[in-house]
Image (cartoon, rainbow, N blue to C red; front, side, top):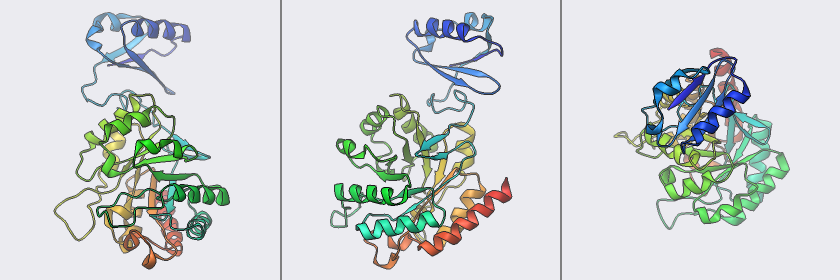
Length: 333
């Protein structure tokens, strides 16, 4: 349920109303915009007498929210959420370019790529330390050592970093990580999501291989229900009948998500296509449909990469991609 307050409502009146609502065992989420203030009521709202609430002098309107996702719903939070990682903002008109290798392989590799992508326009450095792989015999990442090397790259460049968590028991290792990534395979690892909700870290939540947008938002709701509202959604392709590309990039998800949620949305064309030649055009298309950021895999020598070299572009290619994406964004603004 949401209650829209009338313009001119004083802070004292708002506090009194919130205290009354909380006395009914409801959680109250406040969204203060330039035009209106919205109170989102979460819990057993059957206790609320809508007619009584609507009759209050400070209430403009009251309506029930039928969608199962409440806190992620734009009705609860009409204005775009802006997520900050270091000095970088994502959402609400702020665009972030996220780039780096699929896996951290060595200090020379990650620091070298980090310096290149920073010089060529990246805002955030990505890199995998813990790697989810289909085969148990494939390279699983450098784990704790990979995190240490990623932090060395952060020191060398000043770029905020994002990396994936595979097991919530490793959460303590992520203290100095700026954005924690939840991969597609863990999108519905609800125990992990709830634990991440108890942190105040920005969380990048990737859409699962065969999940609907509502399921993605319900996963975000698990995090938000524990108090962490710093969530970035990521479209990274879904599994369809098509086999030419690694996945099918659902770009329609971007405007749909912007319509139904206030959370920022980034696109990962590397995992979606699985082919480096397709990454630049899909990155441009993602910018054209209004994405709040692009996340691409960049490796200094893709042919020798220990993981996902086929979908990785070189630093020089990233420079051209970044120029194209910026031009597209300027054209549509």
